[in-house]
Length: 173
Image 1: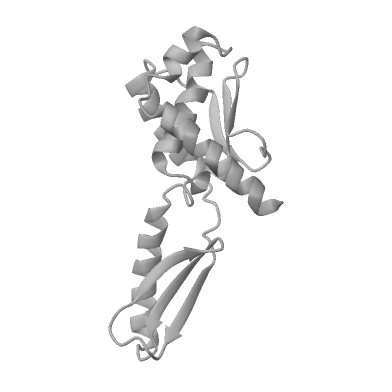
Image 2: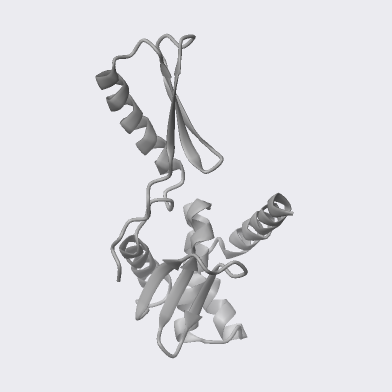
């Protein structure tokens, strides 16, 4: 399992002369944007920016997770829903443009699409439970569906992912 962390998203700091006391941070076009009062010293700005970046990253917790973090999350889900089944390996991959995840039951390898770094945690959890269920039942049989549906938000996650897919397709069209 690789424990490498993906690169942190780009951060843009904007100093505003109109801001007097407050600072804020938000996502924009794949980067973190931090707005700070222009009057702050470099040291004050640095401390404030770091804290705000962490808060913004927490809004999308999967953005900065490593393969090892993914492995820990999958293990917790497997313990809770699937009797502790474990993959041979699990990792983020950037080459899955038409699938959210995949499982090779022969080698017990699970790969999760990098596109899921930007979804809520409960959606990622549904995909992980789905792929872990394939370690027990390789096909999409009724038995498989019973296993995957042990995660209570499976249908909700499927709906979210259908909309997310549509949004991505529309954005690139």
